[in-house]
Image: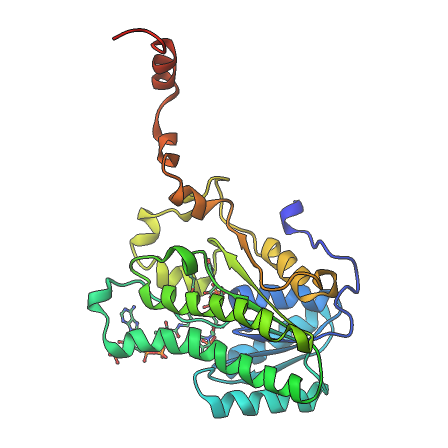
Length: 290
Ligand code: HXC
Ligand code: NAP
């Protein structure tokens, strides 16, 4: 099936060293696997070293290349700086940072403790900014070029109830992406973002559709094309955006959601619930005086 096929040509990422936060699981892992297949080396980082080590072993066994697992809580600047230092020591230079790590859960906002709200803000906004600043300062001081790719969501611009800290933090990441795309372009540093719609992962599904919710809300039903995303589809887009083929793409957020967010936005889009017979009746009565 074409949805599961790699799109870029062999060796498209050869010579690139790519750091992925949250690279041990879910979408970070899937994107990393494809980057490896295209010739890149990887640093994968998150809090759980055992998960990262198992993923690195699996990836190298299946795809070859080199994968360095490094533990780092992106909320802690000392850990971020140490992780970056270790990554640079291993590979000499990191060319791409994929800010993918996130935390999220579903809850009415008034039920959230201050700590709960801050936990998500800290992982998503503070964590991304700390990794970005650490990498950017190093690249600029060494006169190296670099590429950032940040994973946001479509509710970064629409907002969304029940995931308010995540929406606020992702909006901040999107603003940072666009701001730095302009400010750091003079250093040869590009910044782009991807806004995925629903892509099944254990991490997202268990937290956003816990228990009975998964039976009540089928995510595919909200998507005009009638299905959820395949990981390879996202990996294809991400590989393009971190490759040199996208050198002229800067400050962009690319949505990959089968039209999901626009369906929610368009004034009359819910009219797809109207049966054909009713349209037939309306058409037949068109022009007739009441
Ligand atoms: C309300 C909750 C909660 C929940 C935790 N808390 N879970 N509050 N509802 N479901 C509260 C706790 O009570 C605590 O507050 C505070 O949050 C911190 O909780 P900890 O468990 O101590 O935090 P921590 O161990 O740092 O874990 C962070 C986490 C966890 C965000 C809570 O879920 C996590 O590690 N997530 C990482 C992976 C993840 O979330 N992936 C999904 C990304 S999906 P108190 O006041 O009690 O101390 C995504 C997709 C979006 O972003 C778009 C989909 C279409
Ligand atoms: P996931 O597997 O849970 O990925 C989240 C990753 O972040 C995990 O690997 C986790 O690893 C890491 N992480 C969490 N807190 C961290 C911290 N404090 N420091 C460092 N790493 C941390 O979920 P996913 O679905 O693949 O999500 C990946 C990205 O896609 C996220 O940015 C998410 O917002 C975005 N997204 C997903 C969907 C979807 O439908 N799946 C839709 C839109 C956007 P540890 O637990 O080891 O730290």
